[in-house]
Length: 193
Image 1: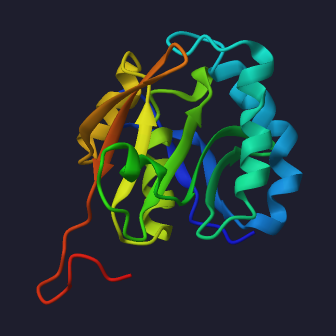
Image 2: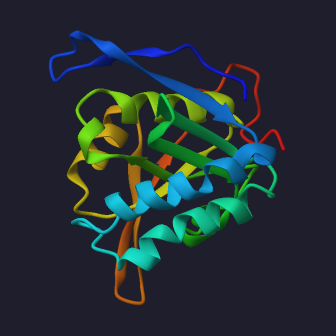
Image 3: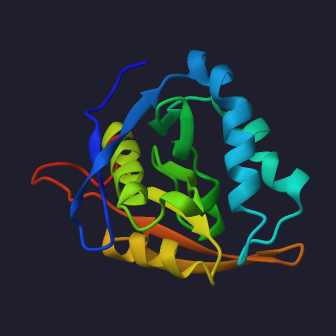
């Protein structure tokens, strides 16, 4: 697995701690080795408010990740300390969210999941996972959907330049659709597909 540099663990005020997390980009061929840990992590995170998914539904994130790993533009970042997965973020080239907001897709990238264990929150790990995935992703428009009451996630996304473009409701689930667009360089067309 290609590794990005280990980041120092930071406390609530940003002070460096002794332990480190290693954040790695994981390619599609290596995903299988992380699936059990992703299921456990998602089961611990998405069963809590505001998501309150049934445990089996929360753990199904691993099944979706395994399927998405075969799709174009798949990018996964894993935060590890030793052998333990403390968080992950992944996305892929996908235009469904653009279509849900009545925009024409143009090589868009969707950040599908970003999850950090409760015991590792407040250390800047979510920001690092977010940044690693988007740095490795195509520089088209980036999309995500999140729970409207996920205060910490919304704070992270807004701080990183995301903006809400739509409210999407299906089958008793309401999500905010958010968009982040990279800065366009002069002379670059709006759609370099």
